[in-house]
Image (tube, rainbow, N blue to C red):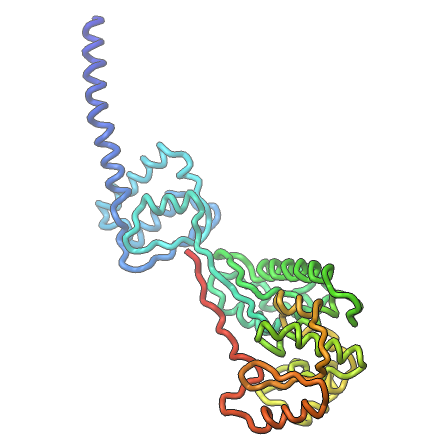
Length: 360
């Protein structure tokens, strides 16, 4: 009997040596065969989905091939999941399947949560109204602020007494499918608060600001006045000097902001005389709120302006400016650059397009 048992054991061991490698080869063959897709396929995996429900959906959409092949591939996934418990714990989200990819690659993505990262960019100098309009075209972003007023949005963000303008840091924010616009705003708000707090702590002495909010207002004006990085601190210096001397800021972007939807690309003389809270040709000091979203560089310029004797500046037409110390010099620059404008004249550089960024 003992000798017979040894023979059975040897025979069983021999069979295992043959069948196990064959089984793994069969499994690997079905898992590494390319999926049936000739174009990019987006797979949305809702929360609570199981691995097998996802595979069934791929089968129904034809990615696993003909019915007979699909059955074998589904079986291969079940065997794989049986031998690898981690494979059964998949992450919710949106996944990209490219032509040539196989089930093994997809299983790795599902296990590691390699979801699609989409991008939303807040451009320097944009307004809160601009941002809200952008949300409508942000693919995969869940909109919960559509029917909320600006005040309600700020209340939802825990800042009920704040005007929203200026408080959302220009940057590119990555998000996954299903994240809300409110959550994205929360991240931009937290970033701007941190930037402002650090900048205020490192501010120059003797600035005509009563608190960090004044610096944020000034930064927004600087941001709207120029896109030339090396001029920001100089423009801030001009505005600070004017405030210290009791002069009005007389800056067109504040007039435009006060006009709101009425602004159609042109400022008339009557607009400069109109008494709005934002018209710095009429009011003394700064407007009551920021007029745009300033970037970190503009905030730094506002709290560390370049001390200058210049009190005036005028746009050359290429985005840069001519700075003048006296009214006479300024009027001469106006005659040169404003009254004889070139055809492609711009008071600031052409706005950069919002980048269409999508990370795999």
